[in-house]
Amino acid sequence: MSNFEVKGTPTRGLLGSTLGFFIGFAAVVALGSTARFFGPQLIESGASILLVGLLVAMPNLSGSLLRIPFAAWSDTVGGRKPMLILLCLSIIGLIGLVFIAYFIFPLGITLIHYPILLILAFLAGCGIATFSVGISQTSYWFPQKEQGKALGRYAGVGNLAPGIFSLIMAFSLSAWGLGGSYLLWFILLLCGTLLYYIIGLDACSFQLEKIGASNDQIVAYCLAEYGQELFFTHNLKESLSMSIRKWKTWTLIGLYFTSFGGFIALAAWFPIYWISLHNVGTVNVGGLELSLALILTAIFIIIGSLVRVFSGSLADKISGILVTTIGLLILLIGAIVMISATSASFNLALIGMVLISIGMGMVNAGVFKMVPKTVPEAVGGAAGWIGGLGAFGGFVIPPIMGFIVDIMQEQGYSFGFVVFLILALISLLIVFILNQKKDQK
Image (cartoon, rainbow, N blue to C red):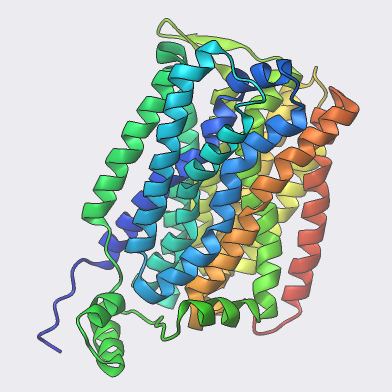
C-alpha cells in the first residue's frame, strides 16, 4: 500500500467542493435580483405575476431535479467530474442571458422571448445542483464523527454565495446596468470553475479505484491514512434505488423541502416582496443608488448561511434531530410574523424575515447531519433525493406565492407566507415521527 499516491487532504477536498458549490449557487439570485427589470416588461406585454414567479423560480427547477442523478453519479465516479459538468452547463446558460441583457432587453422583453428566458434560466440553474454533488464529495473525505462540522461548513459557506452576490448585484446594477451585471457574473463563474478544476479532488477511495486498487486495499488504506469510513460499491441505479427505499430518506426530503427549498424560494422572491409590498427604494452608497430590496435579501441569505455553519457543529453535539426541531419552531414563529406584516409594518416584516432565516439555517444543518448516518451505504444517492426533491420547493413555492398575489392583490404578499406556516407544521409532525425511533439521533 505504500506505493499508492493519493493527492490532497480532507481539508483540500472540503475547500474544493465548497468552492464548486459557492460558485454554482450564485445562480439562485440571478433572476430574482433582476426581476424588477424583466418583470415590468413581461407584465406590460401580458404576463401575469404567476409567470414572472415561474421565471424567477426556473433556475431552482434544474438546480433541484439535476441533483438527483448527479449526486448518485458522484457515488460511482467521485464528485469532480459531475461538478465540472454542472458548472459548464451553468456557464452556457449565462452566456445566453448576457446576450439577452445586451441586445434584447434594451428593445423590450415580450412574451415572445419568455420561452427563451425559461430555457436560459434552466441552464443557469444547473450550478445550483452542485450542492448534492459536493455533499457526497465532502462526506467521503471525512469520518462519521466529523460529518456535521464538515457539512455545516461546506453548506454554510456555499450558501453565502447568493447573499454575497445579491450585494454585488446591488452595486453592479447601479454602476453597469443589467448587461454589465450578467457579464460580471459570467466572469466570476468562469474563473471559479477554472479554480475548481485546479483545486477540486475526489476522496481517497475514488482516486485509488481509478489506479486499479482492490476493494480491500482501498478500504484499508483510506481508513488508515485519511479516516474515511464511507465507501461505495454500487452503480448509479443501485445508489438511487437503495436510498429511496428507506422511509427515512422520504422524511428528510420533506424536511428539506421546507427548509432549503423554502430558503432558495425566498432568496428569489424577497426582492419582489420588498419592492411590491413595502415599496422600498434605493440607498446611496458612495454615490451609487443601490437597491434596498437586494440588500435586504442579502441579509436574509447571509444570516441563514452563517447559522447553518454553526448549527452543523451544534448538531454534532446535541444531535441533528434536536437542532432541526428548534429550527422549525423558530421558522413557525417567523412565518406567523410575516403573515401579520402589512405594507405599513416594515420593521415587523424585517423581524419575521430574520426569524425565518435563522430557522431555515438550523433545519438545513440538522437534516444533513442525519444523512450519512441514515443511509451510509449510499450517501450520494440519498443526498441526491433529499437535495433534489427537497430543493424542488424553490421551484414550487414562488409560483404559488405569485398565484396568491394574483388572487388577493397587495394583501397576498403577506398572506402568501401561510405556505411556510403550513410547511413548518407538517415538518414538526415529521420530526415527531422520527423522534419515536430510538435508532435515529
